Length: 248
Ligand code: NAP
Image (cartoon, rainbow, N blue to C red; front, side, top):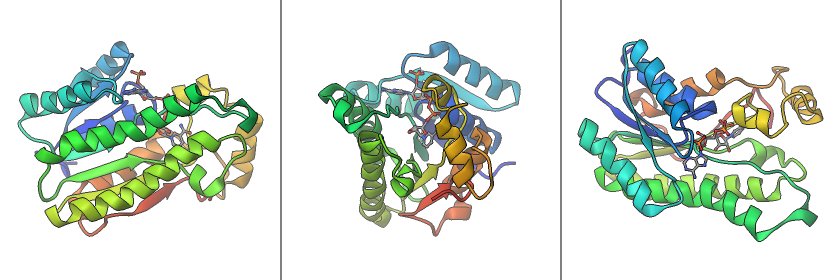
C-alpha cells in the first residue's frame, strides 16, 4: 500500500506498545518514519529493524517530549534526515491510576507533563515545517467518555488533549493542516501489562462493557491513525475518533 508515499512522519513514544504499531503501519503504508523513544533505545532500534526488513524506511531518534530542546532536536532530525515533515503522531504517554486520596504533585506533574505538555511542545516545534495536507494525530483515550474511578489525573490529561485537538484544528486549519485525536479503549501493550491492567478485574470490566466483547490490540488502532494521516481523511479535522470496540 502506498497511500502515504513521499510523506514523512514522527511518532512519539514508538519504542513499544501502540506507538510501535503506529510506526510500523505508517511505514507499511509508504511513509518514512521517525521512531521516537525516551529510554528504550533497544525497543526503537527493533521497530526500525522490523520496518526496514519489510522494505520500509525509518530512523530511531531519542527525545524526552517534556524537554523543549530535545523536542526541537527531534523535529530537526526528521528534517535533516528526510527533508520534510507531514505527519505528527503524539502517542507518548503514561497512565498511573490512583485513588483521589493518593493524589500527589509528582503524580500530577508527571502525567500532565508527558501527556499534555509533550504534545504541545511537539506541535509547537513541528508547526513551522508543516504545510497544506499535513496531519497531526493525538492519541487520547476513551476514559474521557467512560470516566473510570481512580483515574482523575490521567483522565484529566486526556480531556485536555481532546480540547487541545479542537483548538489546534481551528488554529492550523487555515494552513491546510488537519488535527484529530484517536481514543483507544483498553489495549494490550507493554504499558498495560506493567500497570497490571491485563488479567485484572479492570480487564474483565472492560470486556463486559465492550460491545465487541474483548480488549483491543495495537493493530486495532494503527490503521485508524494511518487513515487520519492520509488524504482519504482530507475533509476530517477536529474529530475525536473512538477506537474502543464500542465502549463509551
Ligand atoms: P506503553 O506501552 O507504556 O509505551 C509508552 C511509550 O511512551 C514508550 O515508547 C515510551 O518510551 C514513551 N514515553 C514515555 N515517556 C516519554 C517521554 N517523556 N518522551 C517520549 N516518549 C515517552 O504505552 P501504550 O499503552 O502503548 O500507550 C500509548 C499511548 O496510548 C498513551 O498516550 C496512552 O495514554 C494511550 N492509550 C493507551 C491505552 C491502552 O490501554 N494501552 C488506552 C487508551 C490510550 P520509552 O519506553 O522509550 O521510555
